[in-house]
Image 1 (spheres, rainbow, N blue to C red):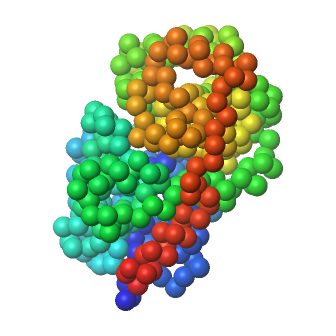
Image 2: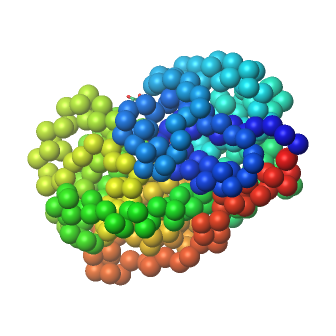
Length: 364
Ligand code: UD1
């Protein structure tokens, strides 16, 4: 069959998931187009990733920008429908769980176009997270559900998804990491920031549950205060976090701590900072996986994870905003008593190939 594929990307964690698919598709004669919704638009939240990952400019840009949950979702639907009606793709590939994923899936499905969901079936079981809603609804209407870990398949089957639609292909983020590890090793980002190898903690915080209320953001600052007494900290600040630090007048409190602050960092430099760090403290989804792969201890400042394999086999522990738990694990890490982590099944750099092979076999 002939026809083109749409690859949807809109927010920072999407770009490293489409890069390996683009590389793999370039080895075939399948036509594809990159659609950027515009959910993220700052240079260091979007364009820098295209440069770092060598992804071509998006073929179509929806220019949606920031808005409330409903407005952002609705605007993407309106703009994406026009594109789909004009271009008539054979398949829409969505990745991850951000607000760009669900509206593009809904539009495609209602126009009878097949959907492939990469990173399907992950569940935090916390419907207060917009990502959880995006995940559940997208999975329900997808035709090809590509999973990264075993728990995902269990979740999908419980939700009544037909086994024939589920394909355990591994973790696409790790494909991207392996594609770029050599390049990132050549950088000296950590040294440029005055950091010493394995002598600093890398911190990222941006979840609404941690930064949207004054009370919780204050707890984060207390955690940073404790950690900076134990180890040097590098903290690139996400725009949502920055906005809330300003709103609650907490910037001065943060700046008084012995922490290196920076703007958000591009993919290659971030990987360099992560690989050379002693530990990572984060509330990101993907970083739990990348740190686990690299066997760097990672403490996740959330109550739950949709990626349980990173706890079972990886180097991840859930600490929420519980200072006692953080103290315990930080001390274990510094005393080299923390768990080492093991290799994880199919996190091997061949996920994109498995996905494109399946798509070729089933559709083209
Ligand atoms: C989104 C994803 C989240 C992901 C994160 C990575 C959803 C529901 N959430 O959260 O899963 O972990 O991206 O970054 O899709 N902003 C800027 N510049 C930008 C983009 C955003 O300043 O380029 C600011 C705006 O004030 C905006 C806020 O950040 O309102 C939040 O952006 P949004 O895309 O709504 O959610 P994230 O918190 O980035």
